[in-house]
Image (cartoon, rainbow, N blue to C red; front, side, top):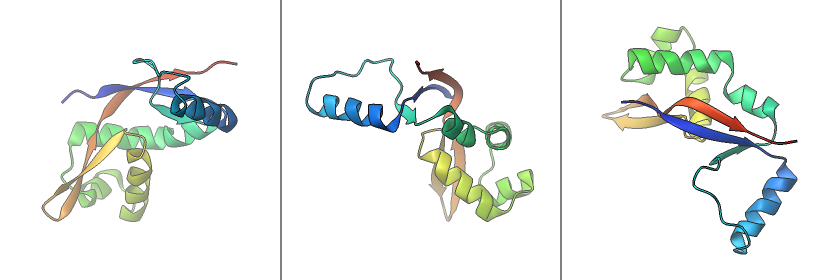
Length: 119
C-alpha cells in the first residue's frame, strides 16, 4: 500500500486560533490542498519528524511488523518508548495503530511530507 502525501502547515497558535474562528463563522473556506495538520513552529514539527522517528517509520514501512513487540525487536527500542512515539505520531495521521487480535499493528499512512509556511 502506497502512503499518501501529508500536507503540513506551520502557523502561530494565535493565527491558528483566528483561522479556526473564521472557519467556524463561515468567513473562511478551507481549500482542498491546504494543510490538514498544523504545527506551531518548525521546531515542534522537527520533534515529530526527527531522524529517529523517520527511521522508525521506515522500519514499519519496510518490515511491516505485526505487533509492537515485533517492532521493539526490529528497532532495539523499548516497547514503552515505541508505544509513546507511535501514539504521538498517530495523532498527526502519519501512522495508524490497527488492532489485530490482541496486538496493535503499526501501519505507515504518510510517506511524503509537504511543508508550507510563510513569514
